[in-house]
Image 1 (spheres, one colour):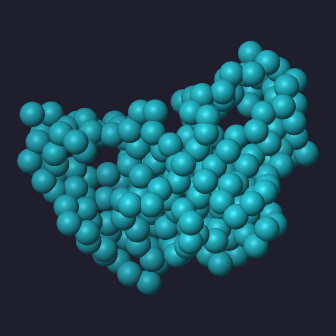
Image 2 (cartoon, helix red, strand yellow):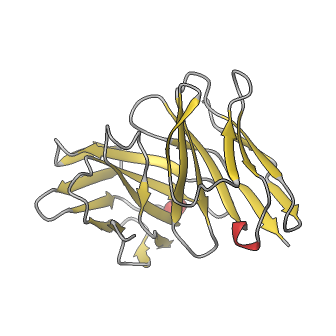
Image 3 (cartoon, chains in turn green, yellow):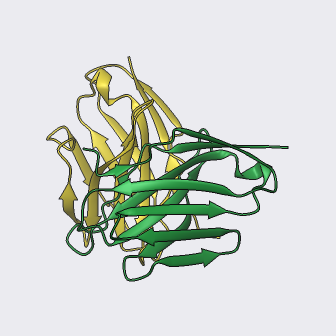
Length: 114
Length: 111
């Protein structure tokens, strides 16, 4: 089941620069998208989300862009900080039918270097 | 800030034994979920629970699995007869609006 794909398993970025994480999906019924950050031995932490009626949502250093026609979303982190080093998961749900069930991508490991 | 809690953090059990994983969702949330992540794999949906009943379950959630909200605060996942392949991190999540908030997880090791 590859409905949500994160094709880059890892990303290395210098502190202060922009991190861009990408996510593609195949299910056209998805209408809500979320990004989570995960440290080792912890649960996923919610970062930011976007509804399919929008194409951009911003929260501080985090911005999510949605391109519905391409079935693609991206997360921009600017400026990147050492504490941003973690695994980032893209997730999607097809409300209301699915009761909020999330489909996750495989994750992208981000390493922010000094 | 309210958070989802899970106990135990690590559970080791022998194959064939029953385990109960416990979660305390955020208090005003109405929707509850269990997910799992086998080492090296994606986070996978197991079950959603609303209004004291299962609202959706995945193919993984077979007759060996059950969920319960025994009181106003706890939400439990029971595996009746564990198998080696049940070894994974199990995450509980809850939501009130559109975003799900996850607990820290229980690492289940079946030997």
